[in-house]
Length: 171
Image 1 (cartoon, rainbow, N blue to C red):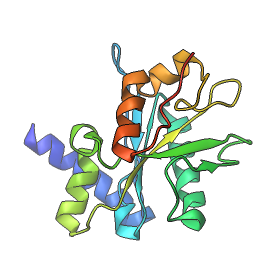
Image 2: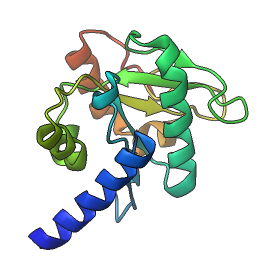
Image 3: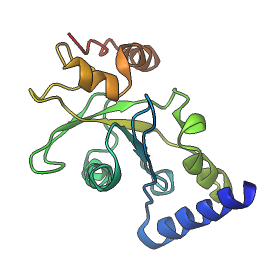
């Protein structure tokens, strides 16, 4: 088991060394949605990103394009909207630095930062909109969109961590 984790970490490390960023994608299972996240953001003085509910190539493209656009906006505020991520897709970014995502899901990011001596800057969740363009933390967002990106309780926690009342998603 430890050898397999180390092998996977070395694979991620090679991608970061080659491209400056790696994006592991974990498939969803049961009630858990797919999740993808970046490794290498802190090494560039940027946040690392995570997206829930998108898998594979779509998640990779959303994170890559958001990261590129975030460079010109950084530092940015919690809840910032970023336009044109994919064919006009607007995403929002939420500061989830105080959540347990780094330890629970993004452990390759934490391991990379520890082994390379980087302080973790911020962790931002990239949120995608429902059919009407509402983000999961906005009033009236489709409940299914909210659920796959963390659910109502998740957004209430994020608002408490961020010190803002942006957790009004859902009907």
